[in-house]
Figure 1 (cartoon, rainbow, N blue to C red):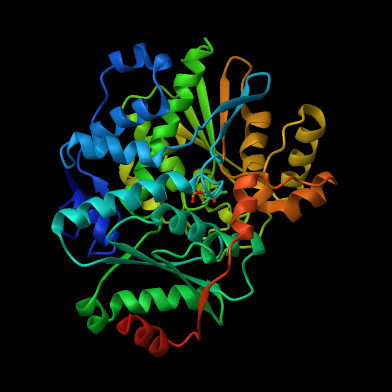
Figure 2 (cartoon, rainbow, N blue to C red):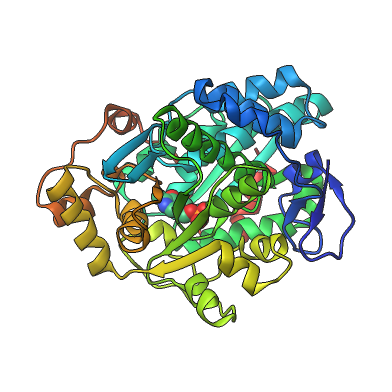
Length: 434
Ligand SMILES: *Cc1c(COP(=O)(O)O)cnc(C)c1O
């Protein structure tokens, strides 16, 4: 399968090139040339299939031409070595719990898949190590670092702003060792991102070493996220629920997660409609209302992983629906909630049902409370474990939130970082000498 750029100004590339380069040379995002459909028969016995088996069928439909089946099966099984249960919260509303992976957030799925795919391509080429540079304000760094941990032929450098990530987050990428190096930058997140960008543009560095980025624009990170939409359907089928009125609500920031679901639907997954749930960074919501896409600076909220002012995957949604505002609005509705509404939903849901949401999941759940019809089945993506936002959640519910043992284990490790100023000269010198 070939991949084209949403900007349309560069030639099509192979899966390998799309994964290794991340962004097209015309700065567009890669999209699969064909969206293949899965035979209807697959859905007849999906209720009996495991997450791994379902994911393999989906992965094989997308990537089967480019990766041999044994390798692909291994990649899928290693990626999904944890469950993604669908849990009833109340009535016809279900939580798809995406927080059972190593860093307790949905990004584990894409990061683990991409890491293994990159490792495979690199081994096949028999080339030097691939160096993954990732700037993080918290969550992405931990998912990427843990996803790439001990993957042969890949080395990861996580750049993070000193003193500006939470203690739990810092532990998740500074205690790993092996092929993961944490660079503690004396500066802001923007400084970290600027260092990474400068490195990708530096000719001398790129001649010396192979550099790659691992953010959500990468096809190998966003496409595998569709696996769990199919698995949610399978679990509803197993429960004997009606399958023709499924509504999925996705707490959205950069819109990679929801785009994966939309492509899943195009491949044949029977989802009736989607809700893109926003916090106050409601650029997409405004687009749905007005037809105008107006990116703007992000504002800080308690659902901070969705604080995005220019959602990068918007270009993919436009491409998927051929720029038709009408077609997009027919399939996706929007909503936007402020911090008070998010906190209120989190608190009331806990008091009423005993289910503890995280602030991002709360945005998704509220959209179902307000917008789901009685004859529909609502699924919202619970994108992270509430303990990842311990202080915020404790303040809202007025109770202690227990830290899962997986998260606690990170906190026992020894922190090890390389200290760095925010000057590119020193970063470059460091990379040239490793
Ligand atoms: C990244 C993230 C999101 C937003 O996902 P997108 O794919 O960027 O829309 C939502 N919730 C959590 C917890 C996240 O880490």
